[in-house]
Image 1 (cartoon, rainbow, N blue to C red):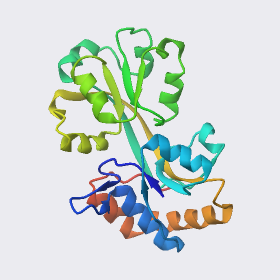
Image 2 (image 1 turned 90 degrees about the vertical axis):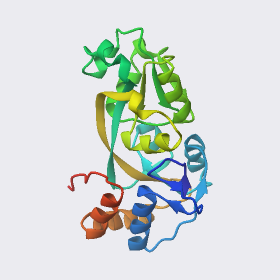
Image 3 (image 1 turned 135 degrees about the vertical axis):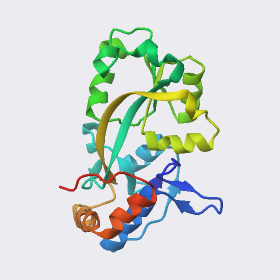
Image 4 (image 1 turned 180 degrees about the vertical axis):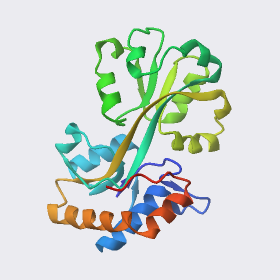
Length: 234
């Protein structure tokens, strides 16, 4: 299992024990599937590369895209994630006419920071491909530098799952100076398995385990532990 530190989804506590919403959900899924996991921490961009080459077998909290389907299998979704566009609170009035992503296309004075190799759902994926945005997207490996650039006024917005701001609060980022401008999309996330070193049968076992977890009291208990909104079960 390849994982990247991102509080409250996956992180090490003060005793260096692995904790987090996705860790707890994964362990509940694996328990039902009869699997056990060993964990390797690495940056998210490397997680994707190692998964493609088969040196790790699985990762969590992944959006399903055509590019990733070349080298990965995807489980059923096991939770949802939110995506918002953050701006500085002091600039909120400046951007008051922006109510959807397309409103940003003609705004040459608006540059967006984002995590490298992250996927933020179909709406943002389409938005990124617009010719007007090609020179106005800034990708970094870590979120903290992006938020510091935003607070300094060097960029005008940052795309993030708002739950991830818990880690930025721990890092001392003044979150009171930031505010959401747009709610971009709610996206289902999946377990992502390497096509090189996993089988359809293993994926099927995981899917059965996810279905069993989603209808169990344990699922709502895990989400409540992290104050996470329950996604709809279909």
